[in-house]
Length: 228
Image (cartoon, rainbow, N blue to C red; front, side, top):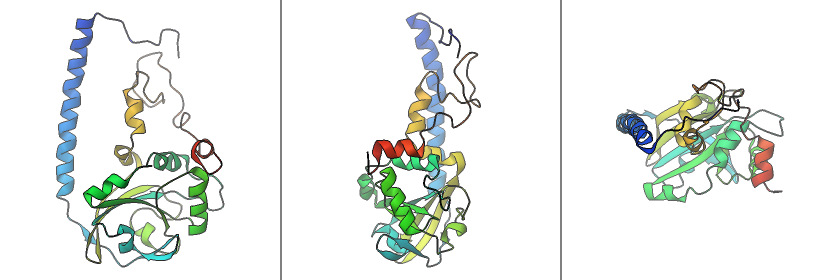
């Protein structure tokens, strides 16, 4: 970062014209996102087998994860066997979701599924102060079948229930999960943005290696966890 890492200073009229030009692009992006969501609602779906996962109170069928709702969002949390601190990206991402009751108005639920054994997963949940419902697919092929195998990356899947039959309707991974996050949306509003090397920023803007500013799992535990 240089001493002159500042946007140029202009008069109010010039600033307003520049803002309106940017807003035209922002509005176009909003309309495109609306069109993408409309296409998503028209996706076909695939019927799922009758998987059994592990919950806090023992074995649970995939259909039971809905808790009576019609729709289900599943975040697949990365898991590294034997590690005290799990993926900081997953830990930070899921720490954002503390008030999910509003989904009930949309006949939906949002849960976490991980490849970690249920006992270890629940201990980690408490350690980092996570409030979502956690389930384990350690003894089931469910995770591997929906793009989140042991040792694999994180993912988001969406399911629809018709009676006791469950259908898979949508999936994403990688940066596709950002649309669920408010943290990046807020950071991207800032003049310096995420301050990561890959970003297109003006000369002299602060930039560091990717992930270097991300909150660690230990920091999240200190802020929100059982010992916080």
